[in-house]
Image 1 (cartoon, helix red, strand yellow):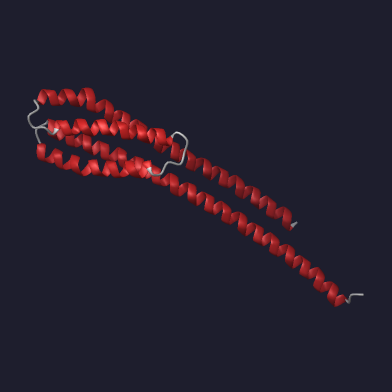
Image 2 (tube, rainbow, N blue to C red; image 1 turned 180 degrees about the vertical axis):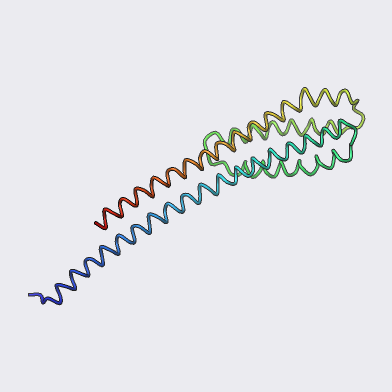
Length: 187
């Protein structure tokens, strides 16, 4: 027969084991949620920043083209050179960070559009082109490509922001479910 001391030790020991299990379960749940959110946010944030950088760079390239068409070759060329490389860097970041369905297709679309856009920008740097031809190329060919690139970049940006929002909502739901589970286990 067990003494009172042994019975108390078994009873309190059992409670300690239950409390340890509840605590460990809670810690594991919170850690899992934290890691999942961190991964989603990091991946999507990278794409959001890349798209913002592409949009900014393409606008500055467009400014450079306008400088060239107005006869300010040096200023335009400097801006174009600087922002072409920034655009390509942002595009490569996006192409190497595809995380959502449809994102890869849009990123490849931007790549194809930018290849054409860059070729036209390079042709406008030719000082032998007549100003009227420069203006025609700018309005009939460059502007439509410029707009398509920006629209695609904005769509990727929106996709990633929406995914971040959904992940945040799911995390809130999971935290709420975990809280309820912890209350139930404690009771």
